[in-house]
Image (cartoon, rainbow, N blue to C red; front, side, top):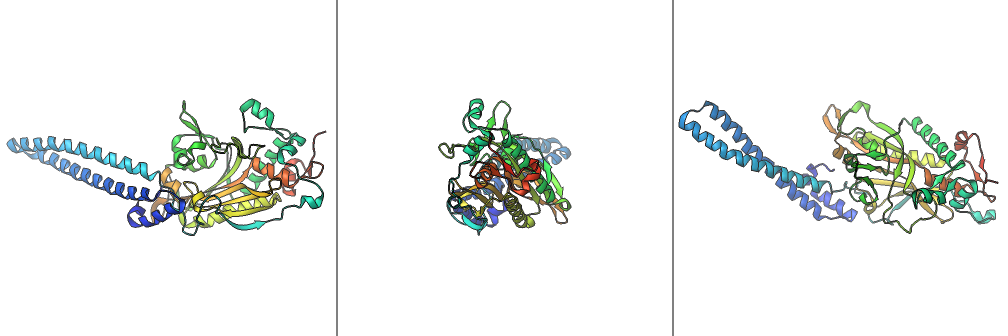
Length: 424
């Protein structure tokens, strides 16, 4: 959540941020009023409570009629204190409810607009000219079936639409990508983690996934647990309710977990193959740092993503996401879009977000340094979303006979194979 001081010191910043996101500016006004009511209610309760305590001391020393009068006043005041406490709690609950709805203020220099108003920061690599090579590229599903790597039919039979099996070389390829990703991440100083894929509501809400993204979340009502859509959730909650020594920052983790998404509202989109599915595995980077270092850490995460994609020899673009397309927690976000030959366009394969202190405030994660105790900043970045990375490898590195060229960086993790060959 935001620092409540912003409501009193710079509400216009919050109004501009809401406008940039295309969200309700009136929410800020409601919050300002709720904050004033909350503070007034707290002050009233504390004043009456202090008077009640003072009367208690006087009663102990009084005698006779004076004591009787004080006792009567104490009884009368007790009802007022109880009512003031209830009013304070109610005002606090209303404020908490509203402040949880307010997104992280976007940075002033983030591009304004919606989903299609991103800015292309750079283009790396050149898409192949398949026509010049003399053949029409096959899509990833046809290639996957030729390789015995993807089985959508049995995925649907066992689990329903948008599920799949990775088989044979497809499964081997995911393990190879995981090993490459973990080797890279550890060389960058990340601690590998296998986090739980089921989390409590506090973890899901703390990371901001029960707001605008709630429709895509799987919930298990009998256990009141949520299936994560990214290991960011568990990694963010890892240090919840803790105070970290500033000297230990930044703390860098790379988590590998299954990810579950309903993909609500996406029916009819990317229904073929494994591009948009209800479950996939992902290696996710997560960083806790001093807020003063957050922007530099964000640049590092983007650099790691670029290095990994380049190691796989996939042409891609780096995009800065527009303000109206940011999630609840992000103040700035970069996406990497890989080239997809059969769609003749770039499609998202990774993203990295600077969430500043927003998630840390919700999860009560703080740091202690010479200046005292204050919130940390959190950042996240996709290192390898397995299904989309496999798609990019298949389509960009395919050969006329259906075989797939294996980038040099991946070969040590596939027993030295330089090509994946079709079955039969």
